[in-house]
Image 1: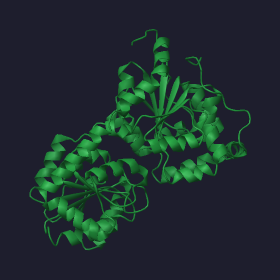
Image 2: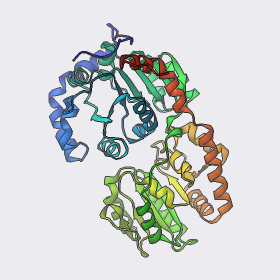
Image 3: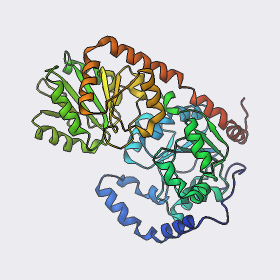
Image 4: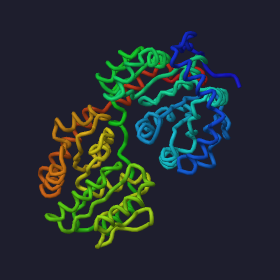
Length: 445
């Protein structure tokens, strides 16, 4: 098939840094080992047995005619951040190819996106698989979300003169010094993008320092994402099962945090004897292990993946299902945001802020520094630096309705003030989208 569109992007440089040349050779030589990797990942539930061919760049779906916008996000967070952008592109009659790398993200995409959005697993970063993928799909424009930078994928796309944009771009405090040590490598990768749309001034400075071209600050798309859905019948069932009980939701927890949450629960029951703690693990497959941990600590657990609702005797409800956070944010007055008591970097607090839950978090939020700084500064979230502080803040949010309402209002104002990234992103991409509209045979202003 003939590629669509005039290619204006910069071609891959002839003289790549030695690191990238070595990476290319190594990834090529390791390609025969991929079946072993796939076998292991299948065993661990990290691949879909029906769709493993996509990991080798083999598609079971035909490429649609006309221009095709390729959007890539590593996992659930990135894909959902771009959901409203994808909806707007689709509304302007663009065909969308959406790629991601996790089974969880594929399940969420199937639930949340219309069937005409084509989802594929991103191929493993072998030159052969990447070439197969690009030969089949011939994207007209590529939008990479945040910072999932696979060298062979990027360099092969650049060599084909595929226009690429890095959108909602983020460079964490932890990643920046690492990339500075590999300045030629990152400069060659970032230089392949025509435009870099950064989440914040800090991100923009870091990307510019590392060699990105045409860096603009457009803001964080996550502020413009619609609040996650919550099935009304399921929410009513949860409300009926928990009526009259104080509730705390620990959202997107990581290993090492559940133990602290259980100790916090025990301390809080001195003040709130009927307290129900809901643990929503970041990775649903950990549900059984967490339920076992709850029982071992002397508390009683009920597990959602078994179809159970919390009973009167349930201390901890393990909500080990996918795509149901919207339910629990609507159910609870206060949310503890996980990934922040351990050095993971925190999870996105914007969704609970949009659904009116007060937010408490730990000190490790470096993946969302700007968001938490804005929320904490306005009183829209509270940081706990110790177990004692965590207990105190959660108790205050449960008992003090006025403080809770003030925190929820402040968070809502921050989210509104920091919105608008979607429109700024679309404006920055307009020259590329205009070209695609001309190719479709009709130009709309």
